[in-house]
Length: 79
Image (cartoon, rainbow, N blue to C red):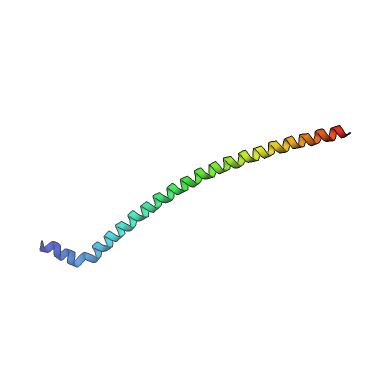
């Protein structure tokens, strides 16, 4: 028992540094996992936003095409 207490008495700084390093690594791993999840969520949101914008653009293009046809029809009647 005295050998263990002597060892701890002499090496407590090293043991504390080891525990702190392990805690720091675990914390870093948790942060990395959280960042990975957030990046995946942002990519999914980006894809949804792009689909919504494409749908809106397609609708606008359809309306403009219809408007252009109506203008051509009105101009053709005028002649």
